[in-house]
Image (cartoon, rainbow, N blue to C red):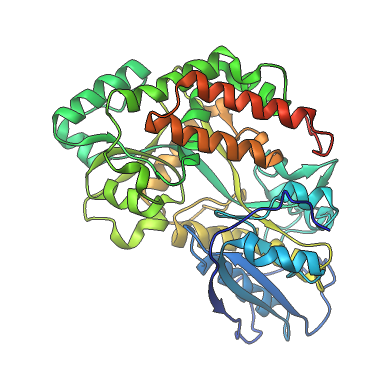
Length: 450
C-alpha cells in the first residue's frame, strides 16, 4: 500500500499520442555498445504517461520517435495528462503503473513516498549505460554536475531531471530600455524602482496567485541564498531547531511582505492562475513576474511582438541564482517493461534530444553540449548568462521541497496568506517552523539529511 503522502487532486485532462514511426536510420551514428545496452526485448510495446504543462509534449514525442527508430518493431506510447497523482495513484496501488512517467505539475505524485515504499526502479543501470550520442561517456558523465542529486535516496538514483531550470524575476528588456529603468541589484533599489513603475501607471509585480509556490522558488529561495548562503537552507533541509527563524529567512520574508504592504502587487493577482497572471504580465499590466525558464514556451503563442522576456537574479548581495534539474521522470519498479522505461530516458537525455529541447522548447536540458549549434531565444540567452555570472554561487532549490511534501504545502499556503495581508511575516515564520517541528517529531515520516 502506498503511503498517504502521495498527493494530487487536479482534474485529469488527457491528450493521447501514439508513435507510428517505422524503424529507420537515425540522423547520427550510434556506437555498437550504445544501441541496446539496457536489453530492451524485441517488439516491446512500452507505455509512457507524461505531464503536459509549460514545456509541452513535442520533446517527449521526439524521444519516443528516437525509441522507435533505434528499436525496430518496438514503440513507446505517449499519453499527455494533467493531474498526474490523481490519474496514476490508483495504478500504483493496483500494481500496474506505466513504464515511464513525467511526474510534474500541480497534484504530482509524492516521489519521496514512492521511494520509501520501494515503488521506484533503481536507475543505476541507466546512469552507467553508454550515452546514445556522446561516444566513450556514460549517461551520468554527460549530465551537469549536481543536476540529479535531489533524487538520490540512500545512494540510489530513483528519478532523473530532464530540464535545467533557472529561477528568478522576469521582465521585458525592451520596455526597461524604453523607460530608462535599470534592473535592481539591491532590495532598496527594488523598492525604489517599484515606486517609479507604479507612478508610471503599471503594477510593479504580479505572480501566479493561485499557486504561491512561484514566489517561493522565484523569489524567496534566491533571496535567502544571497543573505545566508547554502547553510541557511541546509539547516531547513536537516530540520534543525529554529531553522526557519534564521536571520536570512526572517529578513527575506519581511522584504517580500513589503511588496504587499506597499501596494506593489497587481490588484486581483491572488485570484489568477499561472497562465492568467502571465498573460496580464505580457499585456504590460505588471513589470515583474517570478517564474522558471519554462515561461517562454508556456506562453509562446501570445507573446507580443517586441516583448523581449529576460530573467534576472533576485535583488540582493552577490550574483547567486537558483537553478537545478527539474521536470522529474521516473520508472516504476512494478512496471511491465522497466528496461524500456530506462531506455526511453537514455534517449531523452541525449545531445540530439537536448538540442531539440533548446530550439523547440526554449529551455535547457542538463546535458553537456546539448545547446551546441542550437539557435536559442533571448530568454534562454539571459538564463545562460545569469548562470554564468553566478559561477560558484549557483544553488539548487532546498531539498525539503523534495523530501517533505507537507512542509511544502504549509509554506506555499502561508506565502499566499502573507501576500494577501492575512498573515504577518512573524506568523508565516511560526507556521513554517511549527510544521517543520511536527515533521521532525513524527516517527512515521522518513527523515533525510545532507
